[in-house]
View 1 (cartoon, rainbow, N blue to C red):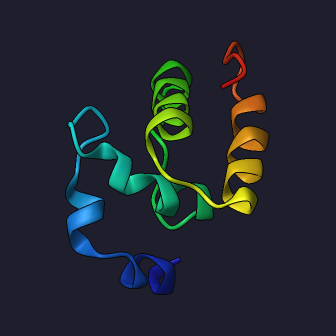
View 2: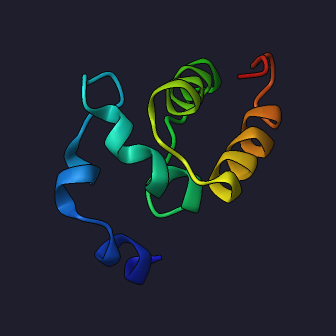
Length: 77
């Protein structure tokens, strides 16, 4: 886990999920190097924001959809 955190730019880790530029955290969160918010509702909001605002490859988009489906009560993007 330390290696993964070290490979993530500090600026992305420091961005809050409710910030205007939070979309910069999406790739890292989808890949597992940045944590999604711990509360399910906040995680759902962040994931749906990533689905709508972050340019994602087809592979990352598919992984994001799978992650969204694992959050209780989170709808489809």
